[in-house]
Amino acid sequence: MTKRITALLLILFCLAGLLAGCHDKKIDGEVYKGAEIPIYLCDQVFDLDPALCLVNDSAYQICSLIYDTLFKIDANGKIQKSLVESYEIKKDEKNKEYSLFLSLRSDTFWSDGIYISAEDVVYSWKRILDPSFNSDACCLLYQIKNARLAKQGDCSIDDVGIYAVDSRLLQISFDEDIDYNAFILNLCSISLAPLRERVVENTDDWSKKPATTVNSGPFMIRRVNYGFDTSNVADKSFSSLILERNAFYRRTKDAKYLDTSVYPYRLIIDFSKTGEEIISDFAAGNIFYVGEIPLDSRGNFKDTAEISDTLSTHTYFLNENADVKKADGTTEKLFANKNVRLALSAAIDRGAIAEKVVFASPATGFVSPKSFENGKAKTTFRSVGGELIASGADLAAAKGYLASAGINAADYSFSISVAPYDTLHLAVAQMVCDAWTALGFNVTVSPVSLAINDEQLAGEDVKDLYDDIFIEKFYANNIAVAAVDWIATTPDPFCVLAPFATEFSGQGQEMTSGEYQDVPHKTGYASEAYNEKIAKAFASAGADRTAALHEAEALLAEDMPVIPIIFNQTAKLVSPDLSRIKTDYFGNAGFTSAKLKNWTDYIETAAPIGADETDAPSP
Image 1 (cartoon, rainbow, N blue to C red):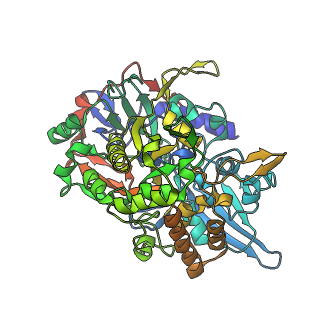
Image 2 (cartoon, helix red, strand yellow):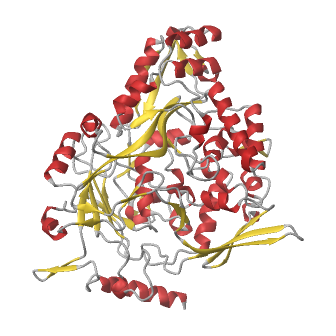
Image 3 (spheres, rainbow, N blue to C red):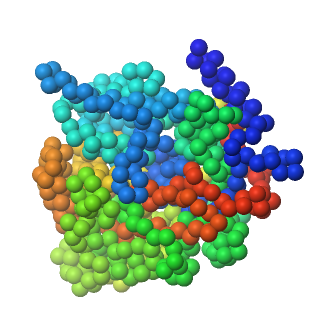
């Protein structure tokens, strides 16, 4: 019966191209499916695995458009149901059984017409909890029965309390009565978005190509053209991305011709334009939205752009296990020395960097200004915690830390690794490089090149993929100093602070003498005092939990395992002809209801789809 229903849906979808839905328009005998809106959304992205997009603002933005989550957080910090239609909490105090039941909406489909099922949720969460998988999002699930034990290899992943009661009903079991509102907040994270097992397990590169992905959000990836030589990333000729309406998104049973709630037909992003061309085209009305204002033009828009804070902090991760070269030819684990890390932090003028970036503020702590203090947006964790890190540079203090460590900076050479496609990160890296050079170190900025991937998959020629070597090295802990956008998985400060504790790090387990061993934070940071603070926060609630988190952040400021640089902001340029753009609490723009005035006037100017682009399969 299920196969018949699916087949019927696919037939109807094919017929939909021949029939006119409410967003379609017939012009000179040709049917157009809706507005094709040229925009510049963000920088180019090469991998869109929602579980691994937490160190790249651009990847997070696109994932928010193509993947749906169980719940969402609106711009005001209010939790809204998304994939979930209703939920019920059941408690059996006598038997100490506690469960949360989530009923999925009846109008939830993947972009190929298959139902999004409870089994998809179970799979995606168990994937994150697998002992071999690296993800900071693990701590979001640790209240679930046996979740921590499974991650630590102490029980089977099948023993975790996540069950598909049927295709639309999910049961989550807990060992004790928990704060269910706090847990539901965790389910807003894009990291916990459902994934379909057959798609993910088909190939390691499933998230890099439209032909090997299916999407659950309002848009799907129709076509992508990476289009530039890895030896010259400045030459981005023909680089483009087309996001197309997911015809199955929120399709109600009585909808005609599979019409959906997504208003635009396509969002067309041309990555080949220079910063000057982006601004020029926006002024001329050739593009209608700029989500990433080019760095050189930001000063011109600081009073007119739509600016909002985010949950993203531009941060430098220092690998304590990295071997740093010395002048005498030997190596030393330089960043394992706390005083060295404190010296590097003290040498940075965060205020000057924020002024250069324009749409940012100095990072005065590890938790961003938008994180909740007590589970609600009304009071923020940062406003209560205050400034733990100075905005200005203190070169004298930095040299004092090095003297205490017995370090002669001139003896050491290292690089700041940066994604090659992010001009803002490159500019910030140069300012940090100058500060550390002034301290005496021999520092260079090292853009990590992309790599062409010509892998053959399941009989299909999957060429022209690009492996983002910077991201791969970062997750493999193979970078000494990595410049990343560190994105909080949720507005709860626990999710930012917990991964620095060994049992909450989310790193893949190591096997030693046949036993699983917890792996510290990806920087190598391991502190028993810090572990105790996070364990206390995990076991507490209310004021006790919040106090423990503030104490934990203070310890991080004393140890500085990572160096926060600036709190990122979003700044958007929106044409007067484009309306109904909604921004979520993370700062991501939503185009589900976007409306372009007189959109039929722009049909001929929409960017063509080139023959060299990789294409999503037809349903």
